[in-house]
Length: 581
Image (cartoon, rainbow, N blue to C red):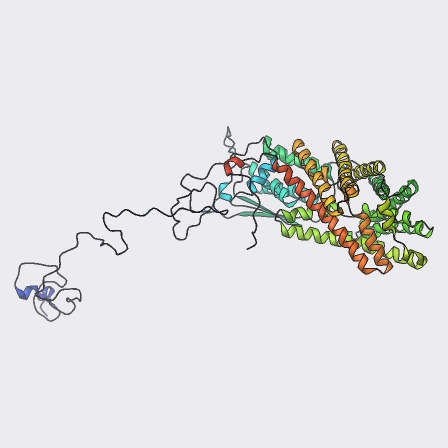
C-alpha cells in the first residue's frame, strides 16, 4: 500500500485540519478553527464563537482567606507563660508549625541561654544540674585539643568504667540520683555527649548515641551483692571528682578504680564484732540500763553478730541472717526477765534491736522515692520490710519460749518505766558512743568518725529538748532532729567534696525506733494485738520521720548552696516527674 503524505495531518475522521489541542488563533478559516474530533474538544474549552476569557494577571489567584490590600495583619496573641515551657522563651512568640514540638523543633526568638557549669562547685551539684536539664540544653563536653592525631578513648571502655563506678556506689547504699549523676559525670568527662544512664535497684544501664543517624551503644551491669564500706564509697567519690574536674586519662581512672577494689577494709572483722557490742550496750543505756545491762546487751549483740557471720559464710539469704542475729539479744534479755528484772530485760532486748534495724536502707529508700526514683524506692523499702520481718521472727520466737517458761512476763509493761528515765548527761554520752560504734560498722574513714559522732550527740540533744523538755510529740521531734543531721551532713560533704552518707547514717543511730519496735513485739507475744499494732505503727512513723527529716535537711542545705548554672537557667530545677495529672 502506498503511503499517504497527508496521513499525519488528518484527524481520526479522515478530514484535514490542524493538530488537536491547538491554542487560540485569529487567522484561518472556520474549518481550520473547529476541533477535528471529540478528543480535541474539552469541557473547559469555550464553544465555537465564544471568545476566550482574559488570562489572569497573577498565576496564583487570591483566596477568600487572604487579607485585603491595605489591611495590616493582626499582632499574634501574647504567649502565656507555663511551667512546662522551655527556658528562655518570651511572650509574643509565633505559633509553632504543625507537627513541631516546643522542646525539639522550636527555638525561642532570643535563643536558649548557654549554661556554663564551672568546676568550682562539687561534681554532685554540677551533674545533678545537668541531669535535670532537657537533653538539648545540656552543655556539650569540653573538647580537648590534641597535639597529635590520637583518637579519643574507646566508647565501650568508657561505658564499662562508668558502669563499674556506678556499681560500687549503688552497692554501697548511695541514692539513685547520686549514682546517675556520677555515671553521667564520668561519661560526660570523656566526651560522650548524648548519653543517658539509668539506675534501678539491681540493674545499671547506660546508652550512648554518637549521632542522630548512628545506632546507639548500650551496656548494662547487674548489682548482685551489696556491702557496707563507706571508706570505699568515699574513695570512689574522690575518683569521680578527679575525672570530672582534673581530667585524668582513662588509664589512670582504671588504675585508680583497681586500687579502690584492692583496698582492705579499715577495720577487721573482730573490730566489727566489738563495735556491734558497743552499739547495743550504748543503746541500752539510752533507755535506762546500768553497767550490768550494758555488758549483757553487748554480749548478746556480739553473739548475734557471730551467728550472722556464720550464716553468711554458709550462703544463707540475708533474711535468715537477721533471724539468727536477733535471737541471742532476746535470749539474754529473757534471762534477765527470768531473774525478776523485767525493766533491765527490756533494755537488753531494745539495745540488741538498735544494732539490727536497717536504718541505712530505709533512708536510702525514702530518699529515692522523694527524688522521683519510685522503682528503686519500692525495691529498697521492700528489702527493709523483709529484714524487719526477719527481726520480728527471731525476737518473737525467743519471747514466746520465755512466756512459756515464766507466765508472769505476760503482765509486764516496761514502757512506763522507760518513760520515767531521763538522765541527759548519761544519754548524751550513750548517744555519742552509739554513733561511734555505727561509724566502725559502716567502715568509715577515720577522719569522718569525729564529725559523725558529734552529729549523733547533737541529734539526741535536739530530740531530748523537744520530746522530753518541751513535751512535743515524738514523731515531729524525731523529724526535726533528723533534719539537722541531714543539714550538717550535707554541708560537711560539700565542704570536703565527699558523700553525705558517712556524716548522716551513723548520726541517726540514736534516733532509731528500737524501744517502739520492742514494745510492739512484746505486746504480740503477750497476746495484746491492738497494742502491738499501735506500737509497730509508731515505730514505722518514727522511721519514716527519720528518713524524711534527713532528706529535707539535705534539700535545705542545697538552698544555701549556689547551684551551677542556676542564674542562666532561670533558677534551680527539680526533677519533674508528675504533677498529679
